[in-house]
Length: 383
Image (cartoon, rainbow, N blue to C red; front, side, top):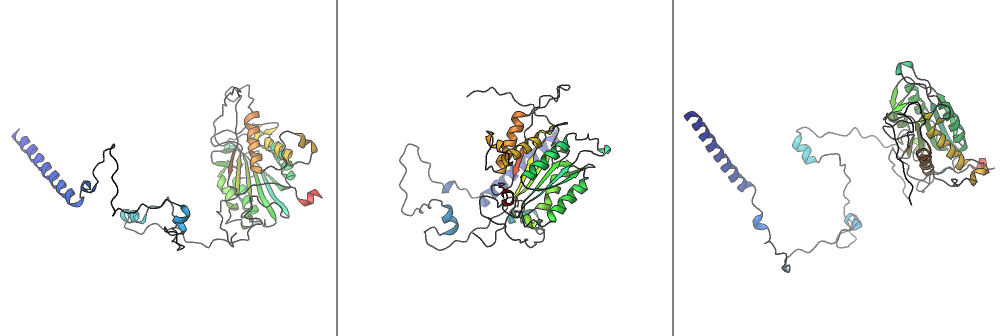
């Protein structure tokens, strides 16, 4: 008992000395700022008049003055602050947490240069080159048995309808059936390497099985990025600044959309562009969800897309009597009309399986386009 009391007494004494030393250290290293604060004002009293020695109030913020002119309004230019990356820690933090040199970026490569497309600063893409461009359809129907994936019955109807619709847009259509994942990538690399300087755009339609973030060749899967990367602005230089359109008819997950029932009531010499600019990705469904296809008539999305392309760009005079017809329709707006058609007028019919019956679907548009995209008739087709 006595030994325990002695240990407890020693511990209390040690703790007291430690706290006393910490208090003394704090008073020397962190001087109190309370003495510097102004006396607390009573909320009901009249504010005191500032003394003559009070510093003048800074002028109101103005973005042009803050970056280009001095505060007093003189013409003397201020140095513009550099832009920084939010993702990088400050040099002081790097120095504090590491004794080695801060991580460096990869070796700087020269920025590729190419001839700017016509009407670079117009609100519309220039679509009056000699050619409209190439369209590639990859139509995967039959998959290797090892994947355990069913044949995509009805996809041939989609490919047929797409070929007709894309020719309406005056594209040069190339179709490839049942490609492996490797050959899908190789096909994209090949078409990206061609000279597109006399073309308006590039178009690709991928009809296959898929999952969230991936697509399937007949022998295995690949990422969407592997198909689109060859067309980046720093890779396919003759397509830089031109629209590159990708249509994906594929599942993006295994979730079902059960829907909801609504009750109706009431100038520069050189211009640097991001390499990922001028892409348009149109998906038949949103991430995580199934994409529906009729085994006889084709997929909801591709069939709706083809109907609306033919409606707005076909030469049938009867089209102009359709209330949905618009003579000058931007392609992104056309894709929005496709979303409407699929979302409002398509519903699964699987009466033998209540879990799959009466389900819905909504497509998705991801636009990195920098201008409006129209498909005016070529002069050759008008003559």
